[in-house]
Image (cartoon, rainbow over all chains, first blue to last red; front, side, top):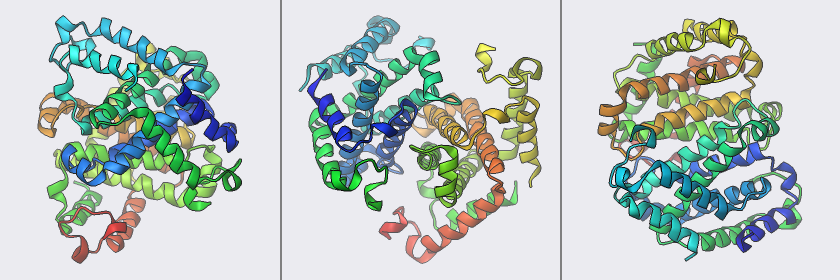
Length: 109
Length: 109
Length: 109
Length: 109
């Protein structure tokens, strides 16, 4: 288990917040933080958003990661391992020869 | 830079997908994957969802993490560092003495 | 075209906001307001949320509707007509005999 | 109460789905459908999305509206009335003289 996960878990344990953290509400929280991340880009191009909102983008992205690590941890999952497993699955779904430079979904390839 | 970030970046570079990955669309993708994660819990308790949808929950959570790491990388941010910075900010906003066992937002504490 | 759509459109025309309202950003706005609606239910049961947050739930739901009507209007769609068309499609996908009291997706029926 | 609300409610009553429709899960459903709407615009400009995905955009927008009308109905709210109330509030927050042609949030005006 990575050290960063321990730091995230320590934060909530110190505050006794685990009692609120059921998987459904943690998944909702990941999604809410992701929306707050997107909000920085509302009515803007990427360039305008980065110029005006860089600090907030960084903070909301961190929040997405924090809740994601908490959820993975509560489900007994190593976050690096599930990333590697998904990349492995994606390599099969999107073979380089078929998907290079193409933004189609694997079901349409 | 952590090794897992290199693996994520290698996946898209091999497919020449960086050309599509502007920060606005990456943020949108983080949010869309977070919604697919939540979809596993729709009309269900956490327990029912984990019983019926564990594999899919794992995959969608991995997708949230993959897009988050890509976005952090494209913005020149170390994902562990922004998590640590945010935890630091949250420790100030939510001092243990004020927030222990309480689920209020810091603006309401 | 329903009268409520005219009221919504009048609001933004008076403010000269149509210039910002491309369909992609309007769709994003519908999604952001939907997340603000969900935020009222974060870490809570429906009952707790309605007790504590009724006014805000009402306002965020109104925001979802306002952006949805704007988007429909900009795409030249009558909102009542697209609802009726979708209900018609759903009646075929979910015949009463097969779906009564069952919360499965039509692809799993 | 508008006729379109009756049609939406009749659809779920015939299928006996009201038993699943607690406000929290309905709010989540509004948000999930909004994300499916946004998905049509992922990695695309508005123009590309409308060219390739017009039918799906129409269907997902209808789904957002259907769940929003169900939620309003279950909370005892008239959807047109809450839109009018929100427009009224927005007129106070965004006076024409201050907000014409300006996309700032009312808290920043």
